[in-house]
Amino acid sequence: MIIINLAIFFISIFVPGYFLVGIFLRENKFSLLFRLALAYGVGVYFITIQIFIWIFLFKLNLDVYWFWLLVLIENVILADMYQRGFVRNEKIYVAKKIAHLLERIRLKEALMLLFIFIQISMVAFNAFSRPVATYDSVTMWAFRAKLLYSSQGVELTDSDSFEYLGGGSHPNYPWLVSIVQFWMHDVIGEYNDVYINFIFFGYYVATLIVLSCLLINFVSLFYSLVLVFFLSSMPLFFYHGFNAYADLILSYYILCGFGFLLMWQQRRRMIFLYLSAIFYGISFFVKSESIIFVFAVFIMLMLMSRLGDLKCRLLLRYFIVVFLMALPWEIFKFKYDLGIMNEGGELGLHYEIFQNILPAYFLTNSFNVWWYIFFIIFLVYFKKIMCDKNLIFAWAYLFLVILLFFAVYLFTNSYWAVLNYTAIVRNILTYTPISVLIVGVTFGNESRGDMEGLGSK
Image 1 (cartoon, rainbow, N blue to C red):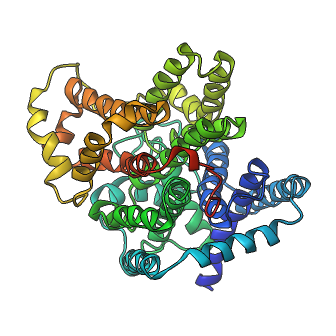
Image 2 (cartoon, rainbow, N blue to C red):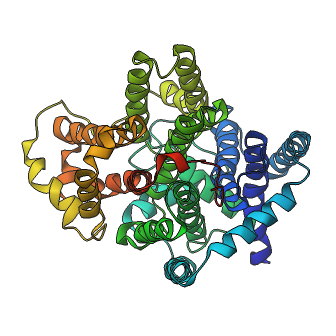
């Protein structure tokens, strides 16, 4: 019965997510794997934001039967919208793509796929065999999910209650991670600390699929698999595939947002720009650090607008979409006077962080040799980067994100996250997938960037 209920949970995520992705990506040139990987993240947001509005904004206890009825009606509507834009020969096209991909798999590609499969299998073994036990997961992300599950609501009036705003020490933390855990347990009918890991394993696999489907447009299948293997085998990325932290989930949405921004640069199709804004907007509901990534996007797009590469009205539309996606969470924060920072205190200068920043990248064993490779690639390909405005945009965006994180460490009480090597390595994890994508884009030949999913070249 548990297996059936778990299947129902994932169906409740994938079905609306797949319909929504299909409505936006109406062309049949996008691979099924790419659509499914996007559907997972979109479906999680689709369910969790509605539960959040129901409980936190409308202040209603969640009636599961009425909520299921609402979701069912929405799926019928989405299915009708999807069918109206459905391309009749999609199954034939997808089959041809799969056949074309299989023709390109030789021994070296097969070996890389095997290595990646081994990594995924090891993460799956850990996810299916051990309960949530890490401190932040137990005391906050999973704790808030347990509170929701036991009460089917949240204390929003008594500020002296331990359960006020969900309990825990960080009421300003977004709710996507906790609500999706709550939804899983509500669907399966019991609380189990092992099943939680399935959610994060799903994001681990989805991130690898999205990355591979983006990379294949710039480099050969073999080199795209090599880069995906680098990411899959990084100790910290591997570890977050079966632990209930928000950082892997944030990295997924940032990768999707950045990837669609690169698509828009290549093809100048508005749907890619809107999808980028949607994923960046969703990230606000995952973790507060998302504001750094969105602020960096704002600066880069403003520069593009000043240089004439982006019309002001498109820039305005982009951030309207970001704002609308983040609006429910921002309304809640405003209503209950919740800030962005976890730590209070005055601003200051904390020069002591500099002794720990480089070791966080190169000596903590969290990322293997990746950051050595990343900076070497930057130096070796510097001339090529400076001759291509798309590469300039990509590299400048990532370095701006890194500098903004450094500024937070330097001027706020978040400096402790650097001194004890805790949050800094998790912050680095959030932009590691886009660093892998940027390296792949740099390797690739600009003229080969069709950017329409796996097997498009």
